Length: 460
Image (cartoon, rainbow, N blue to C red; front, side):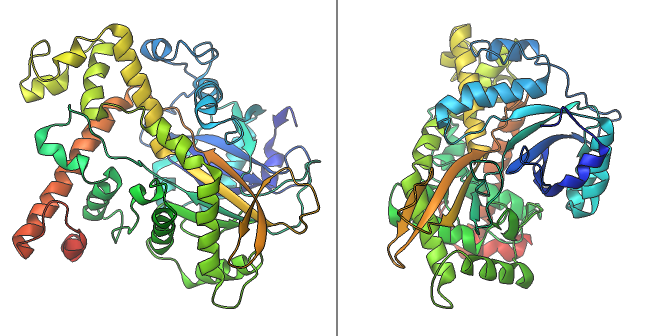
């Protein structure tokens, strides 16, 4: 690989997408060194008066929090610490075969400026308004492009490859005794479903998703199949499909309520290149293929264990956080609780090490609830040819596929975000309860577990 990416190298990288923190570019040049790779380039918020310096290392409390993991605390920049987090924390939990921690390469400021200019018109307008490429970065992360199958020698094969990106979200209901009585609905309704109500009210989405994470994590084929179908019908930003790395279904801007005819046609044309079936049946068998592979891959079992590191819910973990960072407990003060004798005294009386573990486990769990799974398929041309990849047989059409399954977007969560997580949690629950009560007043019969659909029109 080149020692430093220069301005001219920007032409060999194409916009793939972005999240809140990083811009993602896919390699489209001819160098075997970069074939099958993507770049993750950090962004900086437009709301700060000066560029946020991501080169600053971890805070004192964060160094203590992650001190047991070799390499994280010793990292001289936050970018390197975040890469080490993936390598030292997430790889052992999710399996090194499913996670690529990547390598960092140096870039010039001219390269970053050229990239910023090149992708500007391809980025969603709201993303452009929110953030830009951080020009203070001197390195970027190179990781495997999980949406394609590079050959052993690094040159891409011309086979057609379908890839599915799924954001599973939280896959279990909390049972913590520290959840307030007025928030007991959290033990019956998934966070994802309740968050849909808030997003609908705020105009972030125009319709409620049919997806229920509990179906996906159910362990039953019927449940997983229902989850995949629901994601397909209401993808939002939780379900995307790529053909040879190019988006053919789902949204680039994070709010894919409706799929345009053009993208729909691209999807139909794309799956026909991979799945052998009668006209009109390709979508059905595609969803079956995704279901079969999700079940066979075992990804969800690994992920659920990580998510369940959140053992006492944010309503418990927030108390451990305030003690850990040596701040007065804002939540106890708001609730009029005594730290040493009130409802949360059990947490406040924990040892420093126990509180550290509660907070650390919660933040690791948060990574697990925010990440994506990427599953890629290509037709197995001959069962006689040895393949380094696992295979899945779709019995309904008697077609065998190579597949690979990976986790992506394994971002380390800043310690200070604990307060944000608590505030958002309370906002989500409050909004959901309020909307259901209003619906009860209208319909006089729908309980707290009822559907949101009847008041969609009211909040549009």
